[in-house]
Amino acid sequence: MLITVSGPPGSGKSTNAAGLAEALGLDHVSGGDIFREMAADRGMTPVEFNEHAEDDGDIDRDLDRRLREIATTREAVVLESRLAGWLAGDHADLRFWFDAPVAVRAERIADREDKPVSQAREETLRREASERKRYLEYYDVDIDDLSIYDAAFNTARWGPDRFLDALVATVEAYDPDDDEGKVPIEGVSYDF
Image (cartoon, rainbow, N blue to C red; front, side, top):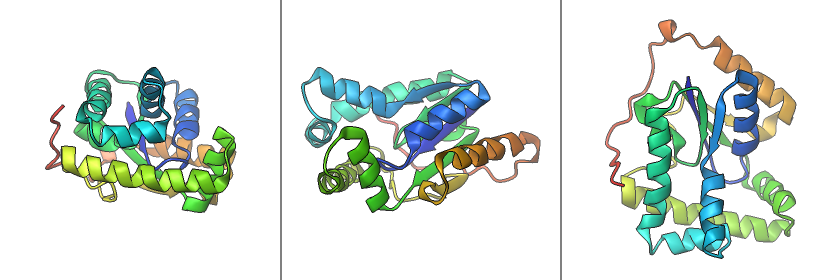
Protein backbone atom coordinates (compact mmCIF):
# COMPACT_ATOMS: atom_id res chain seq x y z
CA MET A 1 0.00 0.00 0.00
CA LEU A 2 1.21 3.51 -0.87
CA ILE A 3 -0.27 6.23 1.33
CA THR A 4 0.52 9.91 0.84
CA VAL A 5 0.35 12.57 3.51
CA SER A 6 0.40 16.21 2.41
CA GLY A 7 -0.25 19.57 4.02
CA PRO A 8 1.36 22.88 4.98
CA PRO A 9 4.22 23.33 7.47
CA GLY A 10 3.25 22.53 11.05
CA SER A 11 0.15 20.56 10.11
CA GLY A 12 1.39 17.35 11.73
CA LYS A 13 2.47 15.62 8.53
CA SER A 14 5.74 14.21 9.81
CA THR A 15 4.54 13.14 13.24
CA ASN A 16 1.42 11.45 11.96
CA ALA A 17 2.97 9.96 8.82
CA ALA A 18 5.69 8.36 10.96
CA GLY A 19 3.11 7.09 13.45
CA LEU A 20 0.90 5.75 10.68
CA ALA A 21 3.82 3.99 9.01
CA GLU A 22 4.85 2.39 12.29
CA ALA A 23 1.30 1.31 13.14
CA LEU A 24 0.83 -0.29 9.72
CA GLY A 25 4.33 -1.73 9.33
CA LEU A 26 5.18 0.50 6.37
CA ASP A 27 8.29 2.53 5.56
CA HIS A 28 8.12 6.30 6.06
CA VAL A 29 9.75 8.71 3.60
CA SER A 30 9.70 12.41 4.47
CA GLY A 31 10.17 15.02 1.75
CA GLY A 32 10.72 17.59 4.49
CA ASP A 33 13.67 15.64 5.85
CA ILE A 34 15.19 15.44 2.38
CA PHE A 35 14.59 19.18 1.80
CA ARG A 36 16.14 20.15 5.17
CA GLU A 37 19.19 18.01 4.38
CA MET A 38 19.53 19.74 1.01
CA ALA A 39 19.28 23.16 2.74
CA ALA A 40 21.85 22.24 5.41
CA ASP A 41 24.24 20.98 2.73
CA ARG A 42 24.13 24.50 1.28
CA GLY A 43 24.38 26.23 4.68
CA MET A 44 20.84 27.66 4.52
CA THR A 45 17.74 27.55 6.68
CA PRO A 46 14.68 25.90 5.11
CA VAL A 47 13.08 29.34 4.64
CA GLU A 48 16.21 30.72 2.93
CA PHE A 49 16.48 27.57 0.83
CA ASN A 50 12.81 27.84 -0.13
CA GLU A 51 13.30 31.40 -1.34
CA HIS A 52 16.52 30.43 -3.10
CA ALA A 53 14.53 27.71 -4.87
CA GLU A 54 12.43 30.45 -6.49
CA ASP A 55 15.52 31.35 -8.53
CA ASP A 56 16.88 27.81 -8.91
CA GLY A 57 14.24 25.45 -10.26
CA ASP A 58 16.63 22.51 -10.05
CA ILE A 59 16.15 22.39 -6.26
CA ASP A 60 12.44 21.59 -6.40
CA ARG A 61 12.83 19.37 -9.41
CA ASP A 62 15.57 17.33 -7.73
CA LEU A 63 13.49 16.80 -4.59
CA ASP A 64 10.29 16.11 -6.51
CA ARG A 65 12.04 13.72 -8.90
CA ARG A 66 13.22 11.70 -5.90
CA LEU A 67 9.75 11.62 -4.36
CA ARG A 68 8.05 10.71 -7.65
CA GLU A 69 10.53 7.87 -8.13
CA ILE A 70 9.75 6.52 -4.67
CA ALA A 71 6.01 6.78 -5.37
CA THR A 72 6.25 4.96 -8.69
CA THR A 73 8.70 2.22 -7.70
CA ARG A 74 8.03 1.35 -4.07
CA GLU A 75 5.17 -0.18 -2.18
CA ALA A 76 4.49 -0.43 1.55
CA VAL A 77 5.37 3.21 2.18
CA VAL A 78 3.89 6.34 3.68
CA LEU A 79 5.20 9.17 1.51
CA GLU A 80 5.00 12.56 3.16
CA SER A 81 5.57 15.95 1.57
CA ARG A 82 3.65 19.03 0.58
CA LEU A 83 3.16 17.59 -2.92
CA ALA A 84 3.15 13.86 -2.12
CA GLY A 85 -0.44 13.34 -3.25
CA TRP A 86 0.19 15.12 -6.53
CA LEU A 87 3.59 13.49 -7.12
CA ALA A 88 2.38 9.98 -6.41
CA GLY A 89 -0.50 10.50 -8.80
CA ASP A 90 -2.53 7.40 -9.48
CA HIS A 91 0.08 5.20 -7.79
CA ALA A 92 -1.24 6.19 -4.36
CA ASP A 93 -3.78 3.94 -2.73
CA LEU A 94 -4.87 6.67 -0.32
CA ARG A 95 -4.09 10.40 -0.29
CA PHE A 96 -4.47 12.44 2.90
CA TRP A 97 -4.30 16.20 3.46
CA PHE A 98 -3.52 17.52 6.94
CA ASP A 99 -3.97 21.12 8.02
CA ALA A 100 -4.52 23.25 11.12
CA PRO A 101 -5.13 26.95 11.74
CA VAL A 102 -2.00 29.01 11.04
CA ALA A 103 -1.79 30.08 14.72
CA VAL A 104 -1.62 26.43 15.79
CA ARG A 105 0.88 25.54 13.08
CA ALA A 106 3.10 28.52 13.98
CA GLU A 107 3.08 27.47 17.63
CA ARG A 108 4.03 23.89 16.72
CA ILE A 109 6.88 25.11 14.52
CA ALA A 110 8.07 27.57 17.18
CA ASP A 111 8.19 24.76 19.76
CA ARG A 112 9.96 22.41 17.37
CA GLU A 113 12.51 24.96 16.19
CA ASP A 114 12.87 26.90 19.47
CA LYS A 115 11.93 30.31 18.05
CA PRO A 116 9.31 32.95 18.79
CA VAL A 117 5.80 32.16 17.53
CA SER A 118 5.64 35.46 15.63
CA GLN A 119 8.82 34.55 13.73
CA ALA A 120 7.54 31.04 13.00
CA ARG A 121 4.26 32.45 11.69
CA GLU A 122 5.95 35.01 9.43
CA GLU A 123 8.41 32.45 8.06
CA THR A 124 5.64 29.90 7.52
CA LEU A 125 3.49 32.33 5.56
CA ARG A 126 6.49 33.36 3.42
CA ARG A 127 7.37 29.73 2.82
CA GLU A 128 3.82 28.80 1.82
CA ALA A 129 3.58 31.73 -0.62
CA SER A 130 6.93 30.77 -2.14
CA GLU A 131 5.93 27.13 -2.57
CA ARG A 132 2.45 27.96 -3.94
CA LYS A 133 4.05 30.09 -6.65
CA ARG A 134 6.63 27.46 -7.63
CA TYR A 135 4.23 24.49 -7.70
CA LEU A 136 1.92 26.34 -10.06
CA GLU A 137 4.77 27.49 -12.29
CA TYR A 138 6.66 24.18 -12.45
CA TYR A 139 3.94 21.56 -12.46
CA ASP A 140 0.64 23.39 -12.98
CA VAL A 141 -0.40 22.26 -9.48
CA ASP A 142 -2.68 24.46 -7.41
CA ILE A 143 -1.68 23.37 -3.90
CA ASP A 144 -4.97 24.75 -2.55
CA ASP A 145 -6.96 22.31 -4.71
CA LEU A 146 -7.83 19.51 -2.30
CA SER A 147 -10.08 17.62 -4.73
CA ILE A 148 -7.51 14.83 -5.25
CA TYR A 149 -7.41 13.87 -1.56
CA ASP A 150 -9.43 11.03 -0.11
CA ALA A 151 -9.66 12.80 3.25
CA ALA A 152 -8.65 16.19 4.62
CA PHE A 153 -8.18 16.62 8.37
CA ASN A 154 -7.79 19.60 10.69
CA THR A 155 -5.22 17.96 12.99
CA ALA A 156 -5.80 20.57 15.70
CA ARG A 157 -9.22 19.08 16.43
CA TRP A 158 -7.86 15.91 18.06
CA GLY A 159 -5.04 15.14 20.45
CA PRO A 160 -2.07 13.43 18.76
CA ASP A 161 -2.86 9.90 19.99
CA ARG A 162 -6.56 10.10 19.19
CA PHE A 163 -5.88 11.48 15.72
CA LEU A 164 -3.45 8.67 14.94
CA ASP A 165 -6.04 6.13 16.14
CA ALA A 166 -8.61 7.67 13.78
CA LEU A 167 -6.14 7.70 10.92
CA VAL A 168 -5.18 4.05 11.39
CA ALA A 169 -8.87 3.10 11.61
CA THR A 170 -9.51 5.01 8.36
CA VAL A 171 -6.79 3.10 6.52
CA GLU A 172 -7.82 -0.25 7.98
CA ALA A 173 -11.44 0.37 6.92
CA TYR A 174 -10.36 0.88 3.31
CA ASP A 175 -11.18 -2.01 0.97
CA PRO A 176 -9.96 -1.59 -2.63
CA ASP A 177 -12.76 -3.88 -3.83
CA ASP A 178 -15.33 -1.34 -2.61
CA ASP A 179 -13.48 1.68 -4.03
CA GLU A 180 -15.61 3.54 -6.57
CA GLY A 181 -14.19 7.01 -6.17
CA LYS A 182 -10.46 7.38 -6.68
CA VAL A 183 -9.87 10.79 -8.22
CA PRO A 184 -7.43 10.63 -11.14
CA ILE A 185 -4.58 13.10 -11.30
CA GLU A 186 -4.85 15.04 -14.54
CA GLY A 187 -3.07 18.00 -16.07
CA VAL A 188 0.07 17.81 -13.96
CA SER A 189 3.39 18.30 -15.69
CA TYR A 190 5.98 15.94 -14.20
CA ASP A 191 8.76 17.91 -15.89
CA PHE A 192 11.76 17.11 -13.71
